[in-house]
Image (cartoon, rainbow, N blue to C red; front, side, top):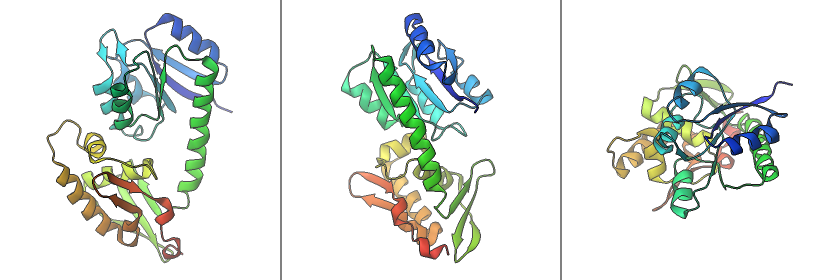
Length: 235
């Protein structure tokens, strides 16, 4: 079986050695020690999980992490932070931008390995669960098909609507604040919260009966609930 590929952004030699000794037998590791080559490396390869430090010799990783989440193919790739930064503000920032886990150095290598293993198991389960969702989102061609009464019909979405749907499908049952959606879809553009609401409303209408999967929580944000998919409509 081909090894899963893990991208590691870490400049500490001691930590690099620990990661290699703990993970290299099971996973194919690629390590870089600076932020500058991160995006080009990710675009020229396909990694199954990212393990990121925050403080690097050439800056902090926040802006780059935002860019990573907008890269085609990396919208739902598991991202774990391994860092010495313990502040709750850093943890909240990481999770708000789309991190899946946050570990503080020094971290027990066996715990890190266990958390990575769990992420891959969840990915496998999510892949199986998503197969029952009658929404086919084709990233490369940016096309969307929905299954109604046994017939697959294409719906026309704008680029922004497509990215919002992609975000919802990549993080099912997760509450996404408007700020999270703004960062993931619009990046650094100056966009108001009500713009998110307007686009989500249009997306709901275009999804027809499946628009019910997008749950609105007043004052909090949105959540995509797979259990709300009316499966009888697909048969």
